[in-house]
Structure formats: C-alpha cells, structure tokens
Length: 328
Image (cartoon, rainbow, N blue to C red; front, side):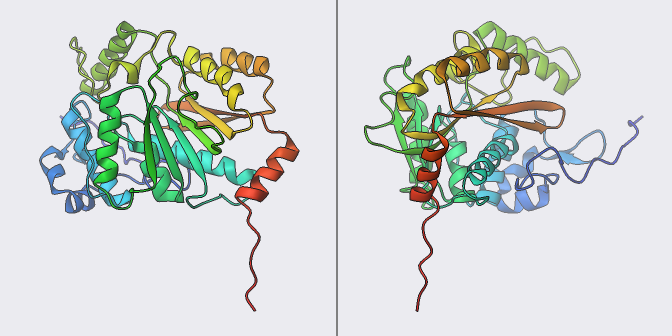
C-alpha cells in the first residue's frame, strides 16, 4: 500500500528570493538540457519524478544538469570521490552575501568584474565562483590546498568560455595559512566566502554519513559511502568548523584593510559562541549573522569587517558606486 500522498510545496520558501532553485526540479527540462540524467530519474513512492539521493552518480548528474540549465555551463565534472555540493544551498550563500554588499552600497548589489571575491577552499567543483560570476558578474579567486582540486577547477574554467578570465585558481602551499600566500600584496578583495570543513575527525565525518544515508534509504547503512562525495580536507580538519573559522578570524587581521567583508558558512549553531568570542578578540568593526535554511536544515553565514564607517564609504564610493556620466 502506497503512503498517503501530500502535495509538496510548489516553492522552497526558505531559500533566498533570488535563488533559481526555489521551485521543484523540472526533470523534463533538465533531461532536455542534459540527456545523461534520464537513466537516474525514477518515480518515488509518491509517484513523483526524482532521483536516488543516496546514489553519488545520480547526485553528480543532477548537479551537471542544473549547472547546464541554469548557469550556462557546457562542461562540468569532478574527480571520483570529490565533493559534489548541493547547488541550491550554495546559490543561497552567494545571494545572501550579494544582498549584504548591497546593504552597504546604497541598497544596490555591486555587479561586474570590478567586484573581486575570494573563495577559500574552492574545491574540485568550483561551485561558488561559477554561481557568483553567472549571477553577478563578479571576478573570483579560488584557493585550495589540494593540487587535484585546483587542477579540476582549472579544467572546468578552461572548458567554459563564459568562465575564462573570470576565475583564477591559486594553490595554497602552506595548509596552516588561510589568506597569506593567496592574497597578493596590494590586492583588494571585496568579499571572502568560505565553506569550511565541518567535522573534527574522519570518524565524525563517517558517522554523520551513515546517519544521513540511513535516513535517505530508511534502513540501517553500515558502509560510509558519501552521496555528495568529499575528500578528507573537504569534510574535516582538526577541531572542525569552529576551529577553522576562528583561525580565519585571527588571520583576517593581517588583511583588515585589504578586504571589505570576510564571511564563512557556519552549519552548527553551537559553534557561534566561540566564533563570536574570537571576533571580539580581533576587535572587528562590524559582524553580521545571516540565517539560511533549506528543507529542515538550518545554517547561517557569519560575516565581519574591520573597516570603519568612513573607510566603508570611501571603499564603496571608489569601487562600487562610480559616478554616472551624463552624455550631452
């Protein structure tokens, strides 16, 4: 006997209003753009078209279709086992930080390649630069400590004419450094984004994977197969998310006048107290916490700046709010 079907909401209202993925996936549209998706689409127990989100290949092909349909990519792929991020959530981060920049630019989001962004941990998927450039025309620097991830991201850029010249990848050769060795001397960055490694150890990462897969399949799973993939450095680091973001805060002081807004995704609410304490120690000028949500999952972006009100005004007037030229 089939479960009683409840009509799913037509719109994912917890996503940002500018997010292209608020509506349910249109699999006919996606298959037309990416025929390779077709074998992975099936009817679920509610007789709706879907994919098996416990299947890494199905998730990767869905991502490929979404990027081709909504972000005009011709090619996208990642090496086996690398992180295949859920695109709606990544798009949300970009739209919310764009809104943040707009709040400090007379209510208008600054667009175009004069806006320079840095993605800490760009990964093999290069997802934040892809979305940020497509939606707002921003120029991106993507850094990573993994040469394979940099190579993969560079292949994506080289294979898509729309990305050439818009994204530059830089290998961080010292894993202890987050900004030093990536931001060049005299370089100005408008925005830093980061999706830090969440787990504190490999064991924590695997335990969470087993829990998620068991929920997806409705049966106990004992083999930790990542449905969204992920290498060690993508999923965990010593001390996990909180320790990484606190290190970001400490090291950001070295670049307090080179960057307008630093930001990081914080998945776990209990990590905020320690991060706020680090921000107080760093004597930042302003902190913003931006809530996000998708389905039953809640997260937030923590953003901070060292610039004073006067410095902020000088920054936006010089870089974003260029005078209008009246033609006679």
